[in-house]
Length: 239
Image 1 (cartoon, one colour):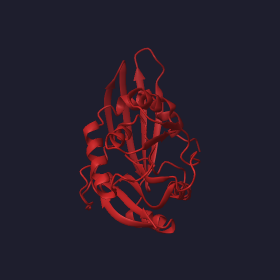
Image 2 (tube, helix red, strand yellow):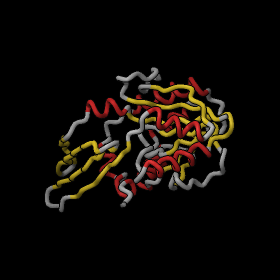
Image 3 (cartoon, rainbow, N blue to C red):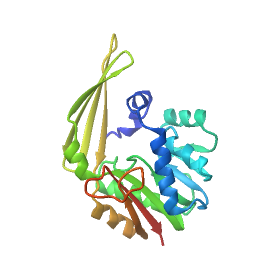
């Protein structure tokens, strides 16, 4: 099956997600570091995109590296930030096992792959990058809230036209189709497909990787997750 994320994270993605709040990123990074501490050694922002969280990590004094598959978004990070970024596939990262004191994946960077087994292998790869005594942070949507609040269709104005977004849940997959219509141009179509992971299932992956749960956070403020929280952001420590 075609890997949708290889073509999606470009200029249109930036335009549709322009509303993402840099202050929210700063709050989320501050709340995370209040739990882990700042003296971690190297930190990896796994799937850093344009560097919204990466910049906040560096402002907090972390030796933070960014890694993303999208050269387009990384160009934005290089333009706006100083410090190392790497264009690579997180399934085969160019780092030694145990290289980082904290590996952090913000804003639903997990669940993109074809099967749960593929996701599990990817999770294992992320966990392998964490040194003993280090931390893994994985920020995911709360499946119950996604099912409750899903907007089946919306339209957004974009430069020169409109983007029509349609969403459905099939099993444990959220599938979004984005149709782009611009005046005088052939319509374009893109997809997002993200697997919803329940707490007990992802905790089984973590236990198999030698990770111990320290918190599940429900929002960018660092509040503990409840069934009504918009997010379920997992923080584990490696034995």
